Length: 230
Image (tube, helix red, strand yellow):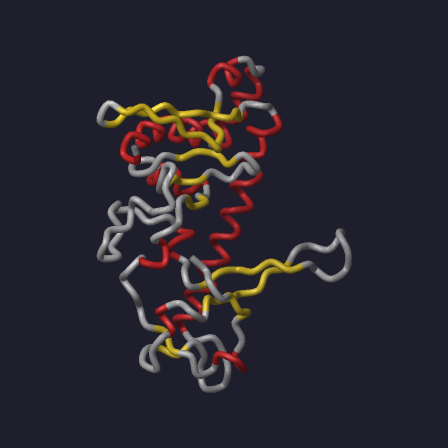
């Protein structure tokens, strides 16, 4: 989705103009998207939500076995009423960089843009910077969105790491049948209810209080949406 990412700065991008684009063509080949905890409930209505094999941030699946996003129509419109925040932030993104003082330094982020996005393909539209080089209102709104999203990522990472710590995420293979043909799909993890029920009651009670159990419930319910992708 992001093709040519550059750090946003007023020297290089002072004359760049932003035009709103309703098409999601840039996400045509995206087969999954990370989700933060605050959007899992809504996203679970439309997407199967699983966990990657190498991380604990939940993802919404857009495809099974194909490199084509089922949720993007041929005209570039999005099929589902809810579009994940990761997709909506395009063409803006936060790029990570080290604090510069060793591992003990906190990680900093810099605001970046995809300069090849269709949003910047015209000399018309809203400027990204004011005449004195400050972020224009549109840019500041995008920055605020990115910061809030990154905070949600941090919260989600912290909460869902509990699933890894207590060993309830297991590799999953889904068997689906369409037109009499059976196919199997894997490469992701799901919460194992049996393993979860073996945990101490104090752990499960903590998950209820901090909202993790709610996320688990909607994750499991969302697996019914896998049949949409079959």
